[in-house]
Image (cartoon, rainbow, N blue to C red):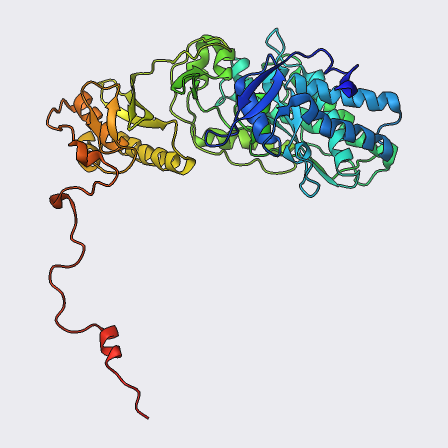
Amino acid sequence: MSQLRGTLWDGVALWRVRAAPEPDAAPRAIALPVAWEEEEAAALAAIAPGSGPVALPRLAEAWIAPLAERGRQLGILADAAEQRDFAEGLRALLLSRRAAPGLALWRQEAKAAPRFVLNLPEFLSPEGGFAAEDYAASVALAVRALDIATGAKASRLSVGFADLAGLLAGLRLAYDSAEGRAVGAAIAALTRGAAEAESGRLAERLGAREPVALLAPAPPGATPVPGLAEAARAALDAAAGCAGLRHRALVALAAPDAVERLLGAESGGIAPAQGPSRLTLDRDGWVAELPTRAALRAGPAAERLLAPVPHAAWIAMAQAVAPYLHAAPPLPAAEPAPARPAAPAPARGPALPLRPSGAVWKVTVGGHRVVLRTSEDANGQPTEIAIALTKEGAAYRSLMDAMTQSVSIALAAGVPLAAFVDAHAYTRFGPAGAVEGDPAIRRATSVLDWAFRKLAREYLGRRDLPDPAEEDCAPDAVGRAAEQAPLLPLDLPETPSPRARRKQLRLVG
């Protein structure tokens, strides 16, 4: 890696880990900075094309070096010194996990429209403020990079930000509050002002193609973050003072993908947080619950600040930031998950499961690890269930997730648990067989059979659901005669069917 000597990569300590882009994929060797987590390694495995080993410096230089060289050729970068500073700026953004380009640049997809995303929580200052000056400079660098990537020909670029919810949590502000919306609007205004100001500087060098919008929307007059409103106003004023712009549109939010995960962003754009905790696999393959990065920033107020918000809260936030965007923000991928209490935990080290109001059981069914989790109301009755599988395919897990979500919705609506026990106990499909880790249930005909008989014992006090026979758990078991529906109607019709009558006709000619 001699070409990296003298750059920010020189001296960056890397650690090696094997990671896969998703649980069903084959792991690949990943080398990344020692301060980064295994989750970022999995994101890197998803970003890098192919299936071989991946080193972050080499993968990043595959787009950083060509961008810097092409910028010099296009005249966007004036000389060798500016070319070097541009490349070092991109490396600094990536190493600090403040910003990165979208998948199109990482994978060098010439036909795909590139984008650049900034990770808002990484611009939090140690004093609890927001590094507005650094953020504006990063936006300008992103505009330059995208203009170079499109050959200085595109009239529309896509610079966006991610994890506004995480930023608000770090600022101790509620997402669904007037203060939170003011900060969101100021961030969007600062992004637009900095982007258009850089477009104006490029227009001075390469020629203007678009007029300046003289009636830009005014940013919030004040926010709880010192200096943020003033920085947004200054950025918009700088953009308005340009003689012309190179681009018609610059600021757009996008649905999150592996790049946001690489940066450590936990939500896309202006989407609300998904709760104060997250599920992950520990080193032994079991499901553990850990506080989110936003919860660690929020501290004791995490449960309140990261509680689920109504869809109307997202609508209000979208209306606050929309005047400063050049495209409508995408809808959140899903409604926020139910809030779970958060507790401080180290960023690295063994997984420390949180204890929600409910229970967690871990067993193996037919050699497959299964985790059953419940949430309870004030009376100790289940209001939500979740079943996590660690060895099954993505389609199987998705069906199981959809099924348990349906049960949770029904439980919350008042459907009795006994109805689901009667419907799902002794259902037959693999994995099935011996149950390890549950002294009360030794065999199960399926994961659902074990789960709902377990729930019946724990919450209904039922002891009338015995283990099935060993032969009933075999892969080729078809069940008892009483459990099977007839394969044909019991009474066949006496008159022939229309198809049979047609076979009796003969062509005469």
